[in-house]
Image (cartoon, rainbow, N blue to C red; front, side):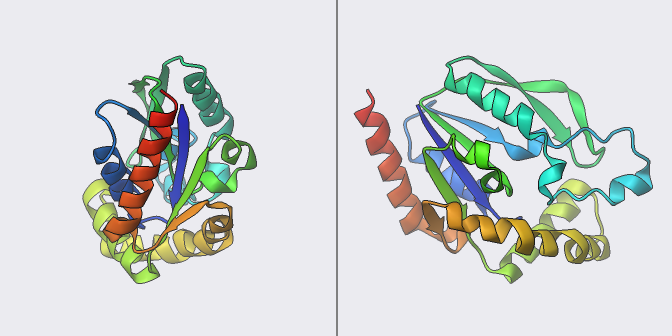
Length: 205
């Protein structure tokens, strides 16, 4: 089993990179764990308190549960991954069944900031992108998926996303084995990474 961590700033194109990597690998050979599924359940907070949640700080993640679930997959057992709603700031009663596969991808903005989680990755990837490009994607995503206005997104970006990126996410780049500049647009880097993963899993047959 090959465990790959894919990190990068919010809006850097991580999801695009993950999807393109999967496309280049054998069918049904990859399982994906999302860091976003492991945010603490804050459904009990008031609407005003929910607006002040800092999703870009490492303390917002239930790391112990994420690591425990990853260890379960590594042992060859399935997990029930939580489902998280940004709108409600809460975990759903529903879960997502994740089966162990030859490749496990753990994806999220903060995954390279946690030493114990980092140690479980065979390959550590950081998806890099210009701040302007990331901001544009964040605005588009938060309006469509999280019901925010442009003004709300910009305030949230200046208050939380930008300072947390500079404090935690950007410095975690130094732990990466591979850095993919230009996000999901970098076809050459993604093809090289997919080829390397294919070679690795073929060696383990």
